[in-house]
Image (cartoon, rainbow, N blue to C red; front, side):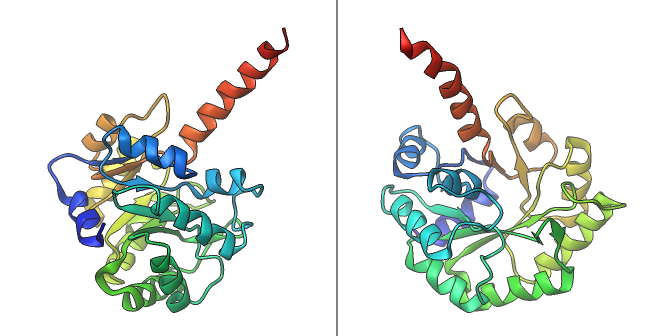
Length: 236
């Protein structure tokens, strides 16, 4: 599936909803349920591979996992690639496109702190230059999960810079609904809202201006919690 198809799904009459997958089985279930695309969750993928979130998965291991997911479904796949695993932007773009993914999520913090906005914008611009139109870039903005005096103002500043760098969508992760609406209004263009099992819901996020809605690790977390409750009941 092409990046053009995924890109168009950010501009439809209804939001693009992405329950994030972590392996070929979960990706197939997402596609079979009728979702228009599959997004991966870096945290969930890392955990099923024996690592934790936070760029601890070796790049070659993550790329291989994404390739298995992309090869398992007939809908576009967009991969959560954390902060790029320290790879140069051209190498990152080339290796990701080799997996069959047509989109990526890149976050603007590393080591628990926000990356300088100009540095991040340059990185995103170089990924765009290397991939051309073949990659849909979702730029995650981490001002609502890091210590920031004015998370809304800083999210708007970063979102505008990333737009100028050529990204397709801006993702102010975990922005409260009212603040998400303000960011969406001031940044413009496609905005990714963060849903969770139990809320906020896609309908609430869409009302706040989100045109793309993803679940991050929450679906995997929910299922693992169910498994923890189930396991003790299997002994008798």
